[in-house]
Image (cartoon, rainbow, N blue to C red; front, side, top):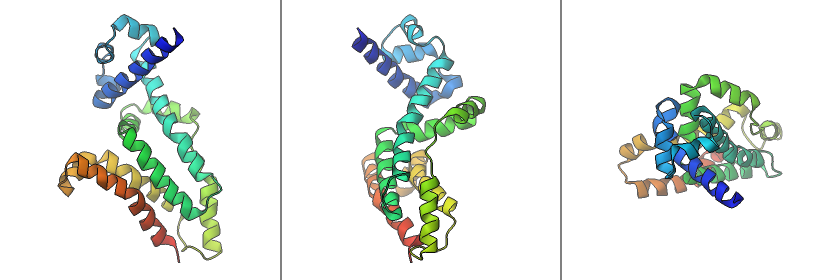
Length: 202
């Protein structure tokens, strides 16, 4: 019975993600989510009493899929350059399997700021302190250039995130089909890491 309930809940999550990603919180309807999941609305309400509660559960689940992986990379015992390589590899690999995630999070940060502020005041964010200290140490011992550690961290995230957020635009600009664009994303793992490392090392 528990396995059946777990499977139904996962189906609801998958269906809700699809609808929320397409229409956002305001535009989504519980009936649409139930239809997408192939269940009746009463069953959907059995699991989640309201659209807001379902949305919050989906948002938290989505965020918490990625946050621990980023935290692990930034706080490992790896060298600075290894962390840059591992970050781009893990982030891009993960998001290629969860395409909705960056757009979904940013969309709701803009469209639902009250919930976003409340959620992020309580959420466990990846800690970047160790990574930033490694950059400072690299500057001091002369292995990397004198760069702003926070700018480098922003560069890492920005260069990895935007190809997913801007996918429709970038696919048109580069004049490639979806398969070719996926290949570019895979290539981008090494491309971003190499570009960032070469930009800071002496």
